Length: 323
Ligand code: SAM
Ligand code: SF4
Image (cartoon, rainbow, N blue to C red; front, side):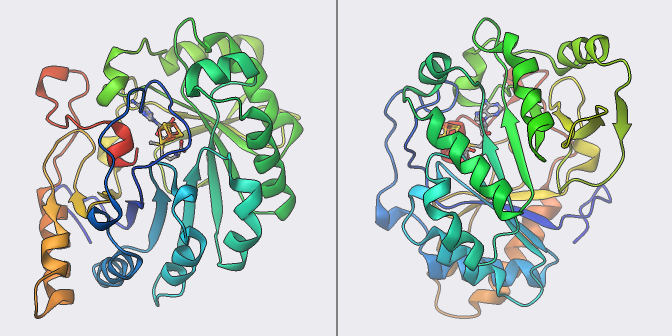
């Protein structure tokens, strides 16, 4: 499905819960009013939305949250989406704490790839960022996914004076294992606004200094806007997702579904279409869903406005949107 600016929209991020087993301070530091079970879309509703989405040209789905693996039945839901005719890929973004436990069932249900969020390899810093001491569990989850042979990406958000000195130890993960390590610039959404972010330009410069033989990696690694580099001797690539210092909106291919059923054309703006209302209507639900998706894609703005924060109209926390 093409939007007004000629971008092909074929990718949907689905947040299946706003609950989480961690409390990353840039995402969910204080208790927020979590959705109740009744406020969240049911599995049947999510599958119904995906069925309509496929008919409008969405081919790839990313399951996110909150932490998607705390929702009971996450693996089976992935299986149901994967089995829909026309679906090419279903992948997962997780903090990795429960990954080892759920991996066999996720694989059985056809999970294609996993992104694991990991900002540090130091147990104390991990606790500072997430409030929990779960680093060993995350590393085990990553190892299990690599052993299982699915593509694994590690997503790191660097913050000044928190974990910015760790970029080098983090990229070593890509030397030791066939995983891509990606640096995501902090976005001024939710609590991210009050965090001191690190520019990817800075990280790339340091990387170039240490690894002058590094080359641009033009192979396709996934569905996102990351730019990748290869370091000789490394099994995985190093990626940069630079929403602030490398605005990639002209290549945006996605729409987002929140756990309560709102379809969001862009992360930066609060606008969305309430699909739950449509699901509760009595007739032509699938056609109405398809129409709503066309509307959302048509309403997709040309670009985010993170560089002028006063124009951002999304006031929810990242955990309520899905990242
Ligand atoms: N719980 C899962 C996880 O941590 O991967 C999925 C949801 S989480 C909201 C998705 C991603 O958003 C994580 O990689 C997290 O680091 C990132 N994130 C959260 N707040 C952010 C912000 N303000 N700017 C950039 N990335 C952010
Ligand atoms: Fe939870 Fe992921 Fe947000 Fe951390 S980034 S609080 S793991 S949803």
